[in-house]
Amino acid sequence: YHNPHTKHGRQAIVHLFEWKWADIASECERFLAPKGFAGVQISPPQESIVLTTPWRPWWERYQPISYNLCSRSGSEMELKDMITRCNNVGVNIYVDAVINHMCGASGGEGTHSNCGTYFNANKKEFPSVPFGASDFNDGKCKTASGNIESYDDRNQVRDCRLVSLLDLALEKDYVRGKVADYMNKLIDMGVAGFRVDACKHMWPGDMEAVFGRLHNLNTKWFNAGSRPFIVQEVIDLGHEAIKASEYFHLGRVTEFRYSSKLGVIMRKWDGEKLCYTKNWGEGWAFMPTGNSLVFVDNHDNQRGHGPGGSSIVTFKDSRLYKMATAYMLAHPYGMTRVMSSFAWDHSDQGPPSHADGSTKNVKINPDDTCGDGWVCEHRWRQITNMAGFRNVVNGQPHSNWWDNGSNQVAFGRGDRGFIVFNNDDWPLNLTLNTGMPGGVYCDVISGRKEGGRCTGKTINVGGDGRAHFNISNTDEDPMVAIHADSKL
Ligand code: QV4
Ligand code: CA
Image 1 (cartoon, protein in one colour):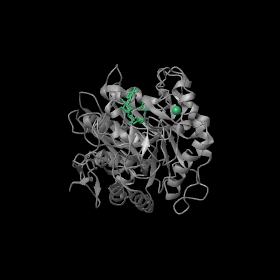
Image 2 (cartoon, helix red, strand yellow):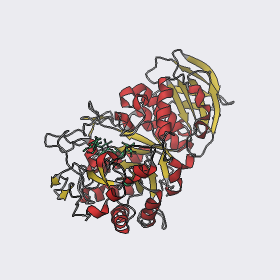
Image 3 (tube, rainbow, N blue to C red):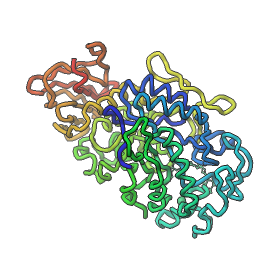
Image 4 (cartoon, rainbow, N blue to C red):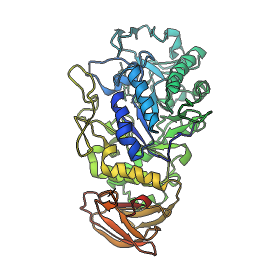
């Protein structure tokens, strides 16, 4: 479950948060495949509750009503078409699977769901699955409210309701079967794996039983015998009863410490400096690299849901965000996920929508950026090009480290790539050993190689591998990156 089955040496995946299936299909063909993105994490595709107070929040999709593939992102046919078209250009699809719970206890009764499927949250009835009252954990939960009240008690974290969400009894064979059927339907359609939601709230043994029932990936696109890739959402900052390590054998796990530490470092809070990242990775007590999924921000912590707080760097701090994302994509630690957001003022606000609540198409501007409220961080030149950098340097060691004892650092990836950062309040102007073969290289931060020419800065690497770098602290992007494929 740890292998993401990426194609053509592609490394980084992108979360196209709340995008419609038709837009994702086009994006795979026109942008993600040509730019070398390995895959897409999609928003939950199952039918969910429709909420109007607050108006159509993004988080309604984390309250399932049925496993019908009918959501705010589109129909089952559109989903199937998207999976096929992305697979055909070698871009994998990873599904956000919400299997710990159904909707909130106060979800009411009726047909206020994406496709009008009836449910009754008061009676815990979801006839379209079907799930009934006995398929939920209420008998097992020991708290007075029925909700999780303390994260120091592993039993209530797993058997009680997360913020009132009706908690499925995954110890029951019947429930495991329904969940596995849902995931298998997606596997048969061609997805490469799952981001499994709220794993801290499920017993690893129950998850193992569900995963054991999953089909191998569709051999139209994947090697025979390929197991679905699994990344488990477990937020472990080190202070709770449940540890991320309890899930390592089941797949990769989200490393939230990476996201919060990188934010603190980039913001230079708590006395942190970029030079301290010389041993970034396990040296910072992160989980083993082969177990981790890393990110600068995710759909929760970019808006204050889940932990991390104000340290998290997001598109709203665009200069720091580009630096943090470049650092992540240049560094060998972990499997990397790039966030692609929509703009928002309130943390509940759903995606860009029409008056009737339907999601807007993603608008693509002539300069490759997005419009109509879609931020598309993955299309920011610096970020796109660093996803390319990661592909070019894949497998190469972290090498030729340099720092100034403060916030200016540089490192290479063998003889395939080199990057320099200046996050200090003064200029960087010096010669460094890049470890790269001599030649003229195009800096992929300020520009790109196009038809044998460079649209940005050029860097001259001498026969001895040394090159001069001059990065003002007032530069729009105070960093320079070169790699084997950016050689002119
Ligand atoms: C509220 C109160 C409850 C109360 C209830 C009464 O908080 O105490 O009992 O009303 O009806 C929404 C609301 C939340 C509300 C709940 C139920 O925000 O206030 O409860 O609905 O009506 C997303 C959002 C949540 C949202 C949820 C369901 O972040 O705000 O809750 O969707 O719509 C922990 C977990 C971790 C989790 C993280 C956010 O360990 O697993 O919190 N992260 C994942 C997803 C996240 C998602 C869920 C889990 C749930 O990444 O996006 O929550 O599927 O750290
Ligand atoms: Ca649970």
